[in-house]
Length: 76
Image (cartoon, rainbow, N blue to C red):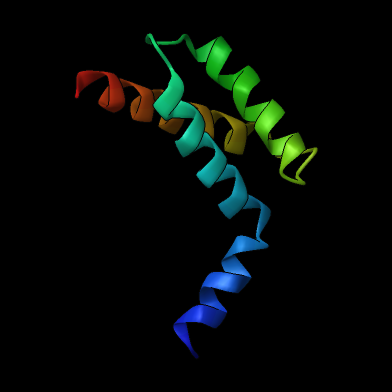
């Protein structure tokens, strides 16, 4: 498979769009956020990116990862 094809396919995957949106959002955070705040952000992003209902385990995973991205960004 060609690389451009794979990138095109991934861009249309809701999980990839959620991940990319969270990465961009984390860059704009000015402080460490709570888990509850992260969960709210993940749910909003998921809805906006075409995944209105995702399992709670996935929400928790994304929220934990989001908080980690924010912490790394603020440490730099």
